[in-house]
Image (cartoon, rainbow, N blue to C red; front, side):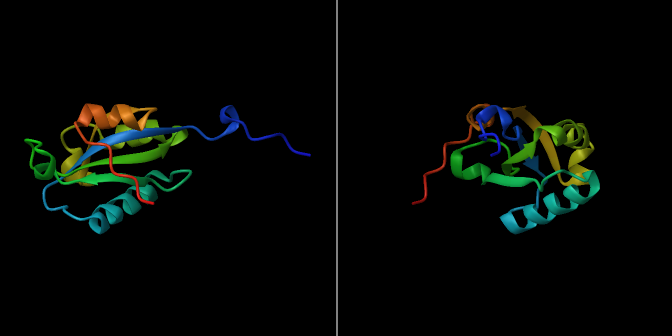
Length: 119
């Protein structure tokens, strides 16, 4: 019989807050960007777009849409490297703003509200 899958044995992940370049205003376009980024970085698991928020809906002063990505711990450093810097918006279509092991902290740093639960 195999070992019980405890919290410590599960795969670790990081949450990365990103800003998308102007013109990316829907989830489908953002998903295509993530797919291309997955291929370039050769990630262990595909990147997941958890939150995708329009800035003017929540009173944010920036015009860019914000999102939160779920990434495996093994891939987090290469993702941060690819999305850091001023040229990341032009080259990749998105720029890393913050990262954490807890999605709640990323939402707080970006000023995003907690989404309503779907049942």
